[in-house]
Image (cartoon, rainbow, N blue to C red; front, side, top):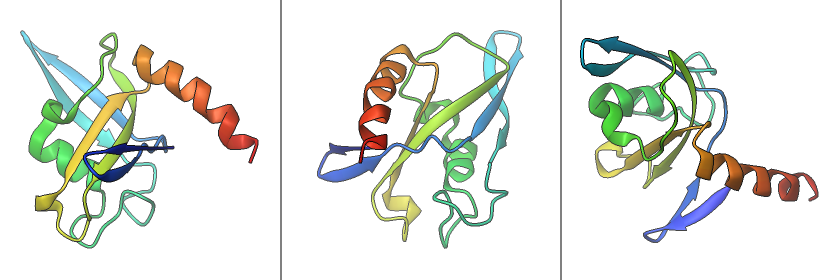
Length: 117
């Protein structure tokens, strides 16, 4: 699925990346990220990082989240990369929980259109 943002085509990937969250007193942390591609190949791989999603979440954490959903220990996410993955320092990666109501309804509208092709 693609949207255009700031002159870039943004493709939202729903390929099975899962975050495991931890609550430490009054702070929520990302404890683990599971890459469905085993950090080898797939749309999340680049020359700079075996998993772009892991790279951005490890460096920027929850700051890359643009969605909202009830807190859960395990959360599947959708993600998009804006920019050329040749230089990750010049890119932006955004993620959001698949349970985000706005995204889930948008995904529900888009998926049937995609399968009709």
